[in-house]
Amino acid sequence: MNNKNDELELVWGLEAISKIIGRTVRQTHYMLSTGKIPARQIGNRWVVERGVLIRFFMEAA
Image (tube, rainbow, N blue to C red; front, side):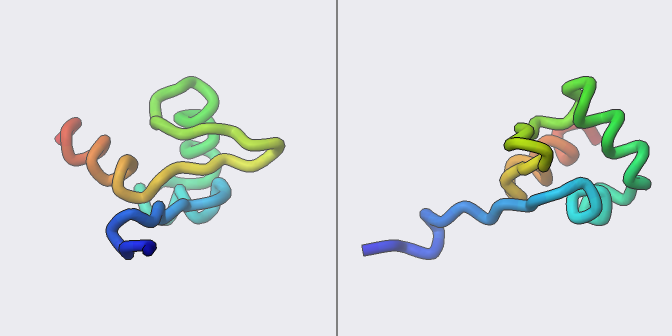
């Protein structure tokens, strides 16, 4: 039985990630490619779990 809390809410792609963090696509690409954001590259696309991304920025604040 799948519980909604057990499901990952993945954010795919530079544009979607940049909207969440409030940065331009170019700034987001730099942050992703230098490891400043906890994400992974799958093929040519970046992916991050929404909760991990939000927690990462909340800890930095």
